[in-house]
Amino acid sequence: MVKLNYFTRVLSHISCQRRSLSTINYKVQNRIAYITLNRPEVLNSINDLMPKELSICVEKANGDSTVHVIVLAGEGKAFCSGYDLTYYAQLKNEKAVQEMPWDPMKDYTSMKENTEHFMSLFRSSKPTICKVHGDALAGGSDIALCCDIILMANEARIGYMPARVWGCPTTAMWIYRVGVEKAKRILLTGDKITGIEAEKLGLVLKSVPREELSDEVEKLVRRMATVPINQLIMQKLLINQVLEIMGLRTTQMFATLFDGIARHSPEGMAFKRRSETVGWKTAVKERDSGTYDWTADKPLLEQKN
Image (tube, rainbow, N blue to C red; front, side, top):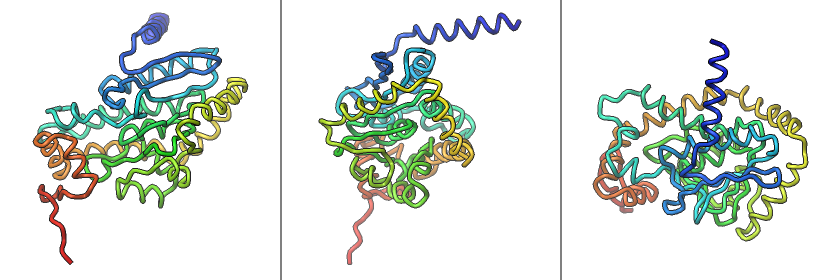
């Protein structure tokens, strides 16, 4: 029985390594694994498959003895624009919003799976470096913030706008990167910030002009790639333990539960109906500009002085 279980795991691992990828490109060059989100026609928005393929690629890089460092990037204009709202918000979709009464544990189980796929970057034994050349928004910011180090283009934007309605960042990495007050500044407004602002807040390591970003990332990862793998693993494990001791897993449990609640609250349901009625782009514009009252489910009237 033990041998059977062992060979089952081995065969499963081989199957994962050989599986073709439809949302991500993967290559290895000079001790560096390059994972590139590859849905540029929809700004690398997240579908059901992308989180799974992301963790498959991270596993593949960790299992490759020639790889020392992992670089995560996005193809096209954006790094990642978040979840695909045409699929999840504008269309009827039980995975995003259930019929009432809803089952919180069903939602939690589904979203927790995605959170764990994103966190494969954090729990990767090898360093993960994120290159944000374009927008990293909503769920896309969740992915980026799970990496060990982020470098951004000055004009790129990062933010979690669903904090205004219909979401909660399931990885909760904002808190651990910038601290309580600055995390509240971002999540209590849902504002987007530029790479320059993100560096000032301490959210990312460095922000540079877009034309210099690739060279800046390569300079850093090539330096890391000269360090023995076991040394890289030890230093990363040591540092990550601090966040684990601070209660990272418990915080993520609450964040993932709250994300489900946010999508099934009266206001969340209003956002979903609005997306289905007028289209997600209009609903998002109203959400981000603060021109819609989601509790009353109607446009917000301007207050006269």
